[in-house]
Image (tube, rainbow, N blue to C red; front, side):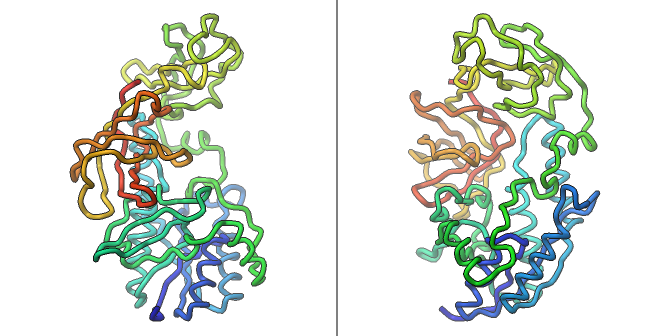
Length: 371
């Protein structure tokens, strides 16, 4: 493979660090960039960007590459955070990581890298790119526990043509092993789990500052009042924690749960400002047989043919068999088999389609039909 000038997004984490090292080993001219995407109240208690930059800089030092600190906070606020708040205010549950990849890491960062004379960019995502017949395919990462193609499904042909995912071929255990072997200072650093701009801070406390919230009733499926919610924006379908009704029992809880089964959010009724909850993980009001998605994005640049495929309606779930119908540039519909309905399909989340290991693209869930 010809050596190229590759700009690597160094986050301070182990995956991007090993990505940079692997590229250097392959003989590429590697430059690191640390992206700062959030500035408001960026304190060390929750948001670790200062420590992350120090980690990224020490990694660059060990590997022997230059690193540049770039501030994308303005773009992030305009393109990702504003949309995030709009979706929450409308009662939906967006996925900011999908938006961040589409708008920041593979747009603003890619543009910046090209200005630096890069031929390719690289990130520490667990995914792969394959060129076939003049087209670029987005493939799952080989480690099934770490595959991140779900978050990358909005990438275009032009973006994939310029992108490398060096750790996509490796299991996470191997990435950690390499990091320790070459003496990277962050070899044992734990993976970040927080949303990029929230970090590990309490989610509801954070949203409280930005969203208007009107308390209202929490009711069960028969309309009985069980408590009060703090504002519909703060809940998502399938949510179990933080409802504040743990001690309430449903005396007729034969549908999917017992007397002590936990409560789950099943519906948000914006018209009456009511949060509807049901008892038991397998309650019928949490099981869906179909969905409609909008704002579609197809990796190939055009929709796949209608027919049987697999889909994920949330990140950490098995691929579910489905039938794709009405695929077009704007959206699509999915039907799930009667024996395999999907759990808590949530408007605002992404429905992402797969043909085996190939990620075809996806869209934003607009509505769903109960099983």
